[in-house]
Image (cartoon, rainbow, N blue to C red; front, side):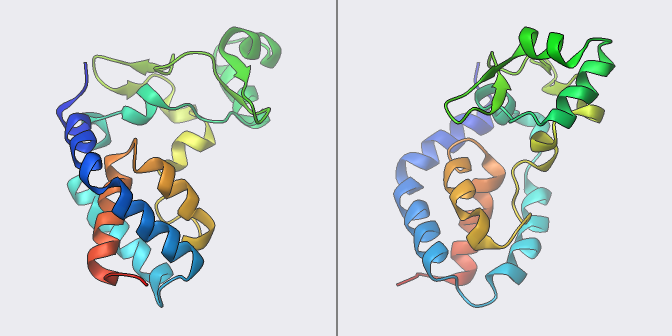
Amino acid sequence: MQAPIVRSLKRRLVYHRKTFRSFINKSEKKPPRGIDQLTPIIEKEVWKDIDCLSCANCCKSMTPTFTKQDIKRIAAHFNETPEVFRKKWLVKDRNKDLVNKVQPCQFLDLKTNKCSIYAIRPVDCSGFPHLSKKRWVDYAHVHKQNIDYCPATYKMVEKMMERVGPLK
């Protein structure tokens, strides 16, 4: 069952996806002055409005990429070898990255939307949705993908468009 926040995101995307993607594409090619300084400010505002536990859509519909360090750490937590953990839970995707075999994520408690391995979760999860992780142009392609899944990313792009205004 979809949470109300995810249904709301999907409804808004019907009307705004094209505009948002156009903004991201244009800002990626010609970044507006000050966008890198504005991003962390907007990120703080976004987290005042968004509660990940009310959504968990990322864990339900996406998969992290597991690094070798992630696999070692999580396998040790389960008293397994990295090889056993890999065979049990992971597959290689078309980019040859190791990702979850199943969705939603096997570590997500669907009743609470909490991660059962939160303290040792993959690095990709701990950084998601990567709002101000790097310079805007270095992560715009990620935001373009994540607006479809993450209300926080959607809200960030929406606020960015309000502040920056239309791009040519």
